[in-house]
Image (cartoon, one colour):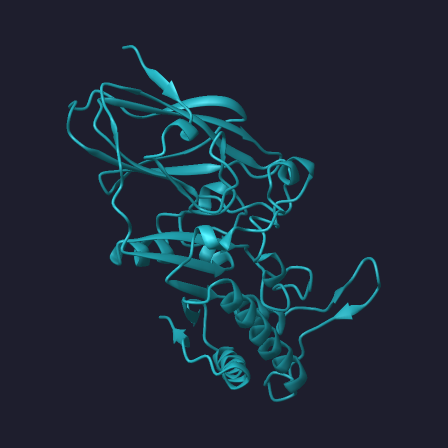
Length: 336
């Protein structure tokens, strides 16, 4: 069968998912970045370029709303069949999602779509989504542990999923396009291990600032995100689980300054008020930044999938922000 080949720059009907800097090639930085399309042909292949040292990129493929394939992408150039032998003329809806998060500790981690190869059909314009949703968070939003047996704890790409995922489920229920901005183990003012470098707010305004190294920089990962080009109807922030975990973790010493960082508990098990206040202040600052970049969005702060011990502190942070700004379109949502 003779296949035609085009880049995504030549196929404007194909929707690029996730924050990105260009379509030829399309670099998939974050969890749930990828492509979505309607195609009437009989066969469709995707061309990749990938690389990694620590964590290989995995992707999931949906066909007409069904999850039909999942695989790791090999290093270098490769091609993968999404479907073939199907009836020409009927519309096939395809969504391809990157399962694995942006890898802060693996500068070699890379996944790009360099083109599509296809037969006997046309790419059709997609309808506009009913909503646009942005999810900001930690391992929960990265889908870490959303696949695999319940007791699995190994740090491997196979256990990340953009499919078995609350953001995907929420967006699909609302007929929404969605994006994820997330890093496992990171928090509002500290990571789970008291490492204050592992916080997401400083990276929010960049395309994918957590992606380190010269190659990611050349691909535009650290450049300012174009918020005007994609405005969400709601920003769902699911941070605080790791700040909560830091209270139960030994202190962390900064290897450069020697400064010791620790979230402390009182003798009765309550959060030390000064450390709880750090979290509330960090929330207030981050909410102000998110509001600045998304002036019309509903802001929903979520907690609860791994416990609600920190919920009163998060409510305090929202109250501080509302008192300072008068913004009434921000809410705390406790999840089961």
